[in-house]
Length: 78
Image (cartoon, rainbow, N blue to C red; front, side, top):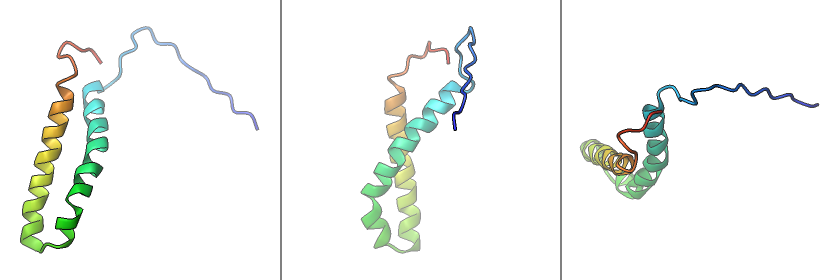
């Protein structure tokens, strides 16, 4: 079975929600690494410790995303 793929040529080459898509892509790369780093603590902790650990993990993810976004020019047009 042959599948025909049709490409549409657009003149602008802009991507809708480009910055948000970039942030989501970076988060998808960073989150599993950081969660894996804290997995042993997560498994050995109770409710309150997990609550604190979740905030620490989210903070680390936010910091990593900010570091990676710094390489994107503020003048970028998506």
